[in-house]
Length: 425
Image (tube, rainbow, N blue to C red):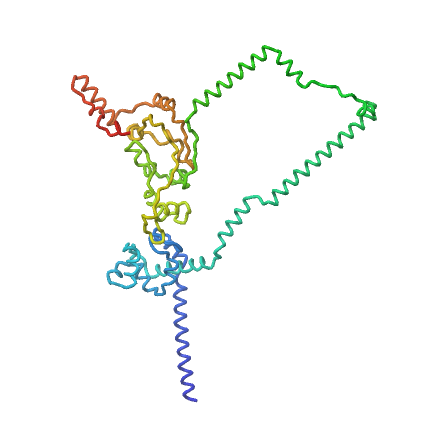
């Protein structure tokens, strides 16, 4: 009996010890503040991490949830370089898995700050997993369904229109019958009118024949028709190959309103050749990837860029065997015999892109704003004053003219004859 009581006493101590440790663990987790962790996460982590998707770094939700050693996580977040230098196996595995891309060091974060971040990540990721997978899709489908009229509504409207038409016919017949009865009662309409009235033949074209005999009227219509047809032919021929307002559908939806308007991105960030070359050119996809490697990675339009480059956002690696060009549709297309140099207008003249391309910063889809005809160009050249002061191009022209006045020899090279675009355009 005494042995049994000792065993019971030892068992109760063990239970109390485990309960105490569990309580300490729960209190430790309770001390972590998810709200503070959210603020720290947005300030420190969002540039490289998302909770449920890989960016520059791993998706933190499954990574932190699967890692149970919070002390190691704290050391890694505060100073991962120290763990790598110490040849820590976990640290080296993560370092090599992500192509030896070093993570930022956050030595300013205390243990409590890191605990708050970890608590926030685990809490939010559990909420994501608890949410039904089809919730968003169902909501989107419901919204889409609510935006489009149902077949019941369409057939109901058609039925109302048919019934209204039948009611109108019935009312017209009733009104006609009432009018006839009223006329009969007032002796204004004989009863046998419908049966005894003789049908008199009427020439429907009598008025037309009468007008056709009027020579002045016929002459007027001939002249008016000739002028109308001539004007229509002239306008049609004048606007041949003038594509003002042309707005083709592009393979990727790109909004200039968002990038150039809302975000104030300079046009030459993407179209840099416009400042130094003849053509503005379509920017390469590498320029898009400067931002969209981490921005809006979930967008299906951005995934079209990934597919064209052979880029895998999960591994952040490129497969050149899968790369293919994007078939953009050209909008502004000058004839081959027309020479236009962007750099002369943008760099030398200092014109803004909107001068020719219109309010590009407000266009969700780009269209040809200007007619780009010879008349339009000449009118612009007649109105635009030349600001030659401080312009290296015009300074050179003035110097050449002064040399000519002094009787000095001037070669074609001094007049820009060595520029590539003089021959290669």
